[in-house]
Length: 479
Image (spheres, one colour):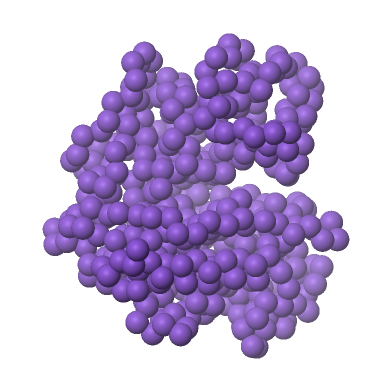
């Protein structure tokens, strides 16, 4: 059925799958429909991991055509994705090579080499970004060491979502939430840090303009009535923009998917040694905000287990949760942030080996393994939340879980119990909602007097988990 109403299209690219989500407003309520889903598979070549951007671009154009077939009055489109990975473009605007995945191992020695040029404390003070080896900075240093010619030939560097916005017809720019994740944007000026680029030998002419969130950057090629909008190119920034927080509450969030991003929204950075040593980062958010957060492993280990188990036969998330509920609590706490779990493949076997190596109870069933993962996640959340409260010098009274992990009721209850805080779960589609609503606001389509979070609260049912509650969770009431 062809919809005549005006709408918006969000492409949400995750580390395992992508989808095209149509959205349209009816008053202060956002409606959504998935029109296309596809894999974001990795290419393994010569011992390295790459993203197949040509295949992804074909899927994006397919999703756009399907969206236009359903909603000819489409007003805008925007792509969001994971952070840190980038595409190097030649003079014709085509990739010089497939972009590396952040899970590739080539960056492992690069942090030590970076710190020999710029001390960790100075790097953190200038960028505010957590010192982890997947960051764009260390990937570029690997390029500089292994293939410096590719950087000299590059006319433009674009991060993943920004590259696809450009391919759709937008200008070759980088949106600020994505730029902030590179560890090369100055946290104060929100521009590329020229001194750091020189210090690292990365002062090539390929660095694009950084633009604010929610900016029209062009029109879709072949469809001039459809705007290309840089909403928030970083998927976590979109998700945080859609947290249905109540004004006046002391709230934090976990954007929970493959990764778990736990933090708060601020207007000023906390650039202390304590924040750096605790691994907290400052990523740009909507409307000049700062997402002060910590990157934790999210559902990655469980996703990899599910992938392995599906090779043996069909299994659903719901079945795994039911098996985990029935399994006894063994207090088998895994350090899910251990690099041992970082690479894909053979995850159930690696968990067993890890437990034996560390003297932990070895899961004897699939349900026990899932429960061990979920309890370990909740324990990691508690540790990070206590660090956050210490840095803020204030307690958190409400923890919002958004993203796909909000659907896992056992994990939400374990988090409430372990963190001893009220958990509000939902929306599960926060990233797509944030992307769509930023588009609508950019075009002046939000109803007068309503914020993005007002619309989210009226569009989704969220669920409240109190610590140690025995009854089923309760739906959150509208604000």
